[in-house]
Length: 298
Image (cartoon, rainbow, N blue to C red; front, side, top):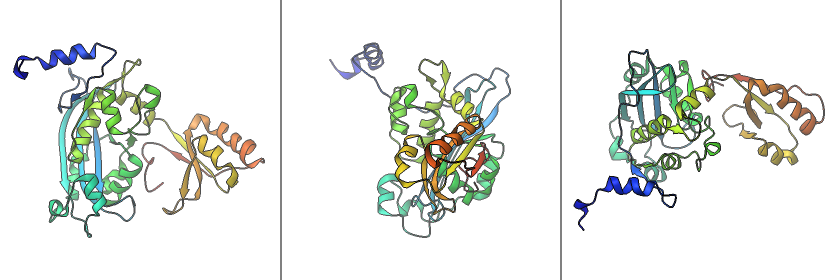
């Protein structure tokens, strides 16, 4: 039987109904997600930067991609309203490992500059900026385009408990497969489109979109607690509890730290007093919201 005589869509549906198969469909970007029906909307931005390296204070942006979208009062994504994509020529040749990862070459970026006025205009009415590694992307964005200092941010990689919701991990490919899709990304804007499809999808068993869950988490106030001069032999205890290490290279303390919801601040400090320092201490704390979370200014 020739391929033309086979209804591939029907075959995929048949396989998907079987517990013995998982069907992945190629992502076809779409612009409409939920009808507006006269409701007021807010504007969000999905953002991704490609850079010459991982040092957020020294390396350079080589590509900026953004997808602008509207969302409804019930926190459902509504529609894509704009796309921004631009290269930027760095002051040094793009490292070979970055070329292998991003497929962006020196020839592709030669002579290109990202217009800061165009960026500011594109994001001017945005009520939220989302990145899939906001701790990385926000620092670069603020260095290059100060408009992002005045925007609330959310991180789709860390502010949704993907494994808890049945996904294999928080990497974009894992999440796409979890919603039955795959894509062949060649540009940063492709990843933004893929992320939008993931966030617009309902999380299994919750009947809520991942975007709604992300917004709920991003709106919470959190507290960063520093376990400065904690005993070295307790590093595994701290790591198991969710503490992360700051090496001090970016101006922050050289110390373990953890981010907790404001309601859990007292309990976390009590843990440090009774399990780590074995005495009364008042650790350094920082209060965070979507306005300063992930920022280089924190």
